[in-house]
Figure 1 (tube, rainbow, N blue to C red):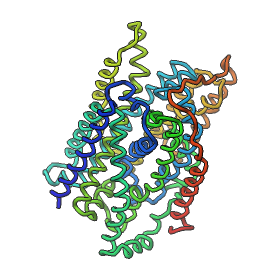
Figure 2 (figure 1 turned 180 degrees about the horizontal axis):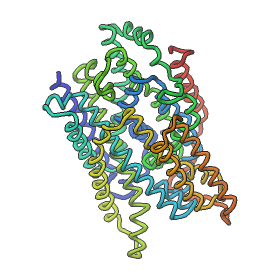
Figure 3 (figure 1 turned 90 degrees about the horizontal axis):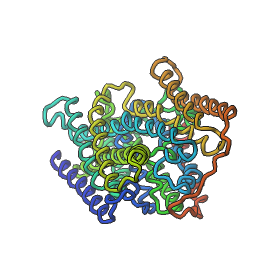
Figure 4 (figure 1 turned 120 degrees about the vertical axis):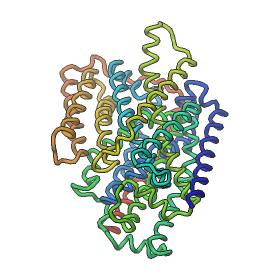
Length: 533
């Protein structure tokens, strides 16, 4: 059983990685700067949508959200399902701005809107977020998943801590080799391949899980889930739940709008679309996949509630269920998807961080120092060396996440709040308030970060951190408004159109947006006291 799972795992992961690198190199996706960092801006909507979905759906979510459902309830779907509304706003209002301005990175837009100092400061904040949060947690989540699926620590007779170290370095090394060889083009191709596997697992894991729970009867298993421990079925979170329902309109909304519309490695994949219409279609496809996601990242947690009692490591609930209920070959596919998702999220993080460093720090400093443009060959070499360096750093600190309390996923979201909201605030106001000066943006970033760290890590506050994110967003925005009133820009900001792709919007998008919003409401209705809870 274990041998067959391992063989199928190796087969699936090698097939996906090899095919991705081959197709990328055939498209010359790693031989130029535009190809390596932006896939030559040639991706259609399927590549855009699949890469966005896989970049977001890492092993962190598969593990973290199922863990949250197991120890709490379905309120954690607020991160994923409610993000559909934010994504549609991004598609309608943010993407046209980015594509019209012809930027390579988000801080480049901030340089156009404010000044180079703001660009440099935000680039630093982005890089710190990747180094301290995104990259280490992605590695840790992937390591945890593989150990739980194959019981590697038990098989080779070493302790849990040592196993996590070994697996973190295994995933990190495979990931950095893959992204250095293939660039963003290989990442988006592998995302599309892995998305097919994810769709299979969305059906297979609930089916086999319910069948296992119901003693070979899916109906009996479903009946057990719907009748036992019904408090876990509720997505309308209270004040003490993973995501209070009221937080969907404060911190969660801000975090989602930031993530899907301003996070560098996400925006980088959106602007890799061949046109505005293709990018908007790609985001709509991602929305649809996010609405299907509870089948994979939440429902297994509901099944596990009725199967396991007092797990020593609650974060292992998803891979443990997959190992117990799936056929051996399907268990190998699950491991391949988990590893592939971890590698791809890690890779887009590396690619995004490298883009920030190359376009916003290295190129300007080199050009200023040598008074000449840096060659493409030198840019590619430096970008790849930077990716190797930050991956080694992330691999060194990732295992220490084991000491975080309140759950793995809680750690990810709480720490990300340090970096996301200040960037969101200055970008959001920069879009719509054209006279706010650069000094207001810099003051806003420092003000928010200091206040958030104080309220979350020094002050013992009973208020949920998501509400603090909303409060501090308002306070930071007011501070920037006041500075803007006192020291307005002499000339209002005007966007200069420098588009590199066609910017005609998707013609029938309104009908699809309405359908997606209707499905969003339906999901919440099902998992509420008005539905099955």
